Length: 189
Image 1 (tube, rainbow, N blue to C red):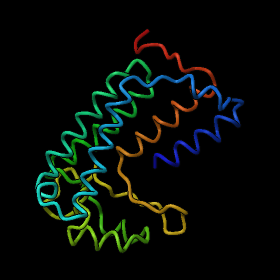
Image 2: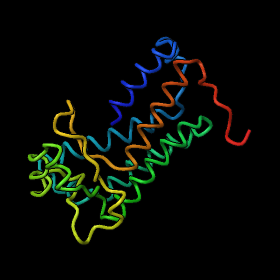
Image 3: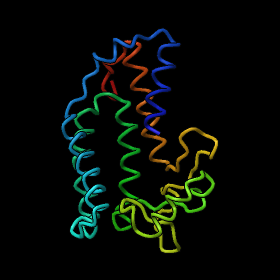
C-alpha cells in the first residue's frame, strides 16, 4: 500500500498545485534507522529463502530488532504529525506480529480472493517466514492482514488496518511537502 500512497500522494499533490521540487525540502531525521530496519527485514527474508536455519528459527527476534530500529527512526520525526499516523500503523502491525510469535497472520481467504494463491501455498508450506496463515490460535485477528485488494487491481495484495494507517500518514506527509507545509507545528501548539 505504500507504493500506492506515494504515487497517489504525488498525483493529488500535483493536482492541488503542489511542486515535486518541494519534496527535497522534507527532512526525515533518523532515516538510517528506518533504512537499517528494512535492511534487517529483507536480509532475513533472503537468508531464510536460502534455508539458513538460524534466520528461520530466529524470526521473532529478527522482527523485534527490525521494529526497534524502525521505531527509533519514527520517534525522531514525531514533530511532524503525519509521522504520528505512520507510527500508529507501525505499532498496530508490531503488536499483532509479536502477539503471534513474530509473524504477521494473514487470511488465506483474502489471499485467494486477491488471486494470490501461490502466496497462500508458500505461507502454508513455511516458505514465507514473515507471515503465517490465520488459524483458531491467532491472536488479535482484526489487526492481521485480512483486507484484500481485488484480483483485477494491478497490484493485488492483502493488508491490515496498520497498513492503512501507514499509507494515510505517508499520503498526508507527501501533501504537506508538495504544498510547502513540511514545517508542521508540534502537537498541542
